[in-house]
Length: 185
Length: 185
Image 1 (cartoon, rainbow over the protein chains, first blue to last red):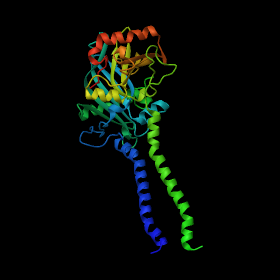
Image 2: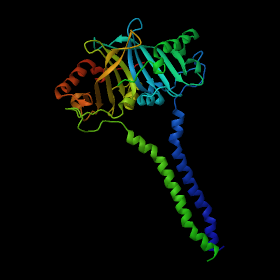
Image 3: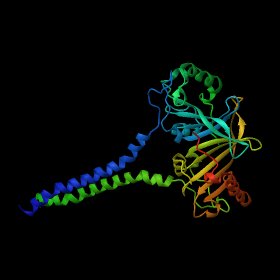
Image 4: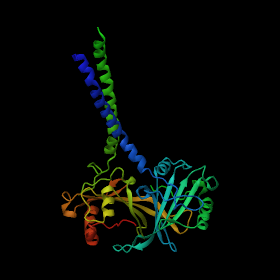
């Protein structure tokens, strides 16, 4: 065995190390994207889907950006906050309707209760409903491209209630792509 | 020149390519973290800092998670929403006071105005104030560990107004680490 043969024998090991480094680097490169994909929000089909529309509560909607709060006087007596996924927020900021497919809006609502510290203030009491709008212009062609879900304690309300969603949005907010809430300044 | 020498001559090029691939992979690996660092939220010292406390408006507070909305009746007639950075949210969820250093809370506020669609609803009108609380138990030892900032149109209000912050929080919310807002259910 001469020295040239020795060199040839060690090179596979060196190659393996270099390849291992590359594979490791590539894996590290991809890890944040895998995590991002795993955490991606969006409704999926399951037993807790709304009747008619099959809309579900997005898993991480509580982390979504605030679009606007609102207050409902009696008899509802609620505080509300509408949040949206990134597509929704981007569309609001661009000021361009209609909302694209993939837009998801979630309205959180609570009974209003007296602040224990300030007589003039009301704050969230118990949660009442979570209401979801999902834009899919092909799937929901009959309802302006929007699917609706109304949930109490995480469970969808009945079909009769879901039949009322679009009629009201159509009657009062058609010019805003059927969405009532505007981005708070 | 024999074949062994030829192999030796080409190997620097191969090495360079492998190195380039590794460098590229490492750069791609780091890119998301660089972006994350660049986007990291937190107040920094500059001209728009509050008097007494040197608190500023965190650049990306509008993306922060909602803690709770609130409503202020007349004469203020405001809708409000308190959001918090991740430290704040984690502390609320764990239910463990006091808030750790690094906690930042931001209260957004708007004049209430009538919804154009629903007589019973009020929605955000013009923005009024942005109010910030920053926890730094060493820097703000005289004020329960909290620094305060009250901003109108992005500019801090005067020193006299900032002198009132802690007195009120101390008088009414000392048992909650001087924070009024509770996490909405």
